[in-house]
Image (cartoon, rainbow, N blue to C red; front, side):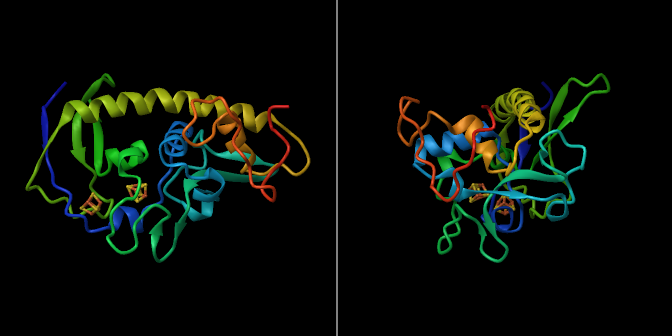
Length: 206
Ligand code: SF4
Ligand code: SF4
């Protein structure tokens, strides 16, 4: 599996929770809802290609509503950062339940010529100061990476189903309903999530 460790230590500068747009998978959202009771209609937002130029316009996670494209993201304030960032302590308030992308940051996967997994290195241009005075074990990162890959395949499949739907008033928030229906904070899926009345829309699955 390549090197067993990567030299890195987070010094909590806050950059990745303030200046970086976090793109959760539906599984990240479900975990946050179950573990924290957060309302996905409040902590998610849907951003346009102009707002996140780093993501290719051909990325499979783009949701289509009419002629417009949207990407599911954690809500953030331009100045204060992520919805879940404690504005005083600058620590993540959902640390144990945070999205996989947050867990992998600032690591990047490297592969051998045949596409098999080689190891992890630190991303070059993501704004992290990349302090090297710590040691990260690769195995937990590798497990996260594998879990992330698997979820992305399912995520893309779900997006394709959503994008095939055509109905009046379709909005990107309707995508939330595709994976959150049947969930309520703290439940194992027995009860239906109570959607805010002003955000409720027709189910994209009907
Ligand atoms: S979820 Fe937590 S770790 Fe991820 S960007 Fe928000 S505050 Fe930072
Ligand atoms: S940018 Fe790097 S050092 Fe700063 S909080 Fe994020 S991971 Fe830690």
